[in-house]
Length: 237
Image (cartoon, rainbow, N blue to C red):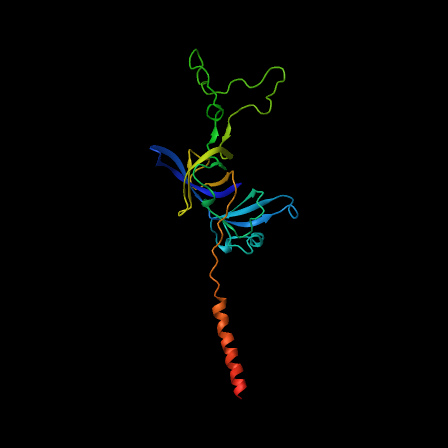
């Protein structure tokens, strides 16, 4: 399974296949792997990814233990996984995704405040004539004579939005690996700058880290020459 943490930037339009597509631009990654959980120690397989930057003085002592060998991040989220090769310190970028991939995006929806039943539950409302004054958007009767109380779960006015929401089967329109951007067809939950969990099917391929060239052979040659000169001087003496 592929996964990454992103931040919603805005909605825009791109030109693709002679069509104008409405897409959501998401800044995704790079996300370092902070912790790898296994069945022996934790009882399940999962990884914790970090996202964003934060100053060292702003993290707590328990968090310092989590970020012991990794630079602290502002966001920390956990993903269930079956990948056995992933290790702490690996970096996950947008390169794990490709145009055409189907993903599901989870985030916190926009808060709408206290709303009535028409907006919150899509009630049609009452008639606007025949003496039905000021009752167009009222919920109507919600209880019966016999039980003499309102049952739990009845759709009523209340706070709307600001809840965890998941949208599935979204398609990636384009990937900009240079600027760590994903362009997702359609809308995703949340307002601008909100944090998103992005998951998709397929193998998680992590690009290998480029290691510096080994120059040990050049450095070790000088001591060998010094030893040879010392042996020659000792033989002459």
